[in-house]
Image 1 (cartoon, rainbow, N blue to C red):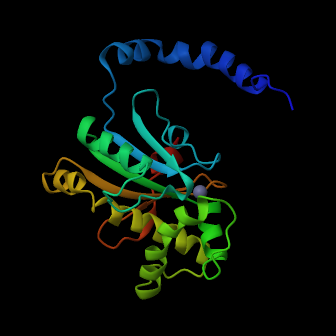
Image 2 (tube, rainbow, N blue to C red):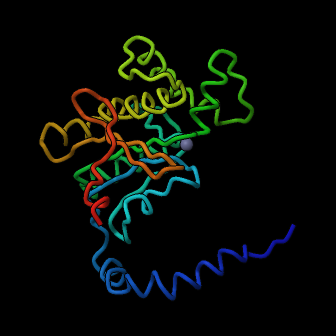
Length: 220
Ligand SMILES: [Zn+2]
């Protein structure tokens, strides 16, 4: 096993210097001096196939991104512990004052799949993942009680339910609720299909996921 820095990352960095940095040079210099002021926070999965900056074609300074296993938001807790996701949410809402938080689920989510496959046995190996994806339990219960989606795909239904639960949990953060009531913040659900590139957006009232408008693209 080589200890050298991954070669493909160096190659990628060289490409970035030639293209990405050149393209955003002025933006990055401005951001370095004046700081970041993104309007949107995206909470997405760690999955390497789901990149918020890629899906939304966003450059530096545009998205405040938090990625974790299965794009989950835990409920507000004041217990001791390293609440990494909650810290990012707090910073986004209280310091950056983002106007939108988007929770973006995705197809073929391994975290959701692990939860489904171990729903009864809780036999997931490892010290952390099992406990983390237990956050999906209320989502599974909510889904069983009130099946919003008339779909036969249990994996997809659980991916949707996970997004809905995370949106619900976001509202347990007092500063999030306060910002929503003050009309300074809105929450959104989305789901990305890795294979087709389709983005679905959750309609806030019905909580149904619909394909995002792409007519403009289709006309090009
Ligand atoms: Zn995932």
